[in-house]
Length: 126
Image (cartoon, rainbow, N blue to C red; front, top):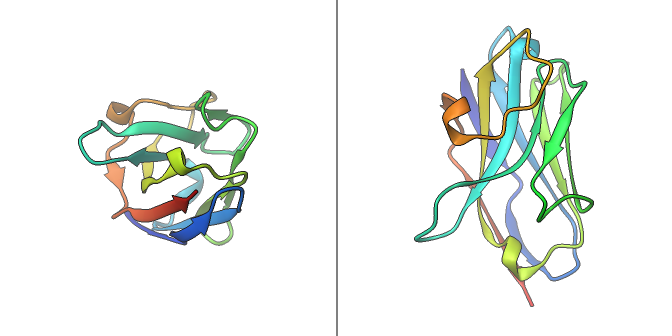
C-alpha cells in the first residue's frame, strides 16, 4: 500500500491544523493506521493511532486532549486534527499503516508498521 500525506504548513502557536493521509489499497479497512513525528537528530515518536475498524484510538501523552485521529474508510483516508499547537509540535509528521484486520488495540511502536508515507512538515512558530 502507498501512503500520501498532506496538510502540513507553517502556523502560529495556538492554531489548529489537519493532516490527511490517503492510502492506495482496496482493503483499507484491514489496516491499522497511525501518525508519528520526527525532528532532526531524534528518533521517530508515536503521536496517535487508530485500529482497523476505527473502534479504538490511542495518543501520546504530549498530544492527548489536543490532537484527534480519525479515518474515513469511504475515502481511504486517515486524518490528524491538531489543536492548541505548540512550538514543540514542530516536526515532520508521518502516517503509517499495518495490515491488522483482527486487532482491537491500537499499535504505538515504529516496529509495528511496515508502510510509511513520505512525511509532511509542520512548523509552529511562537
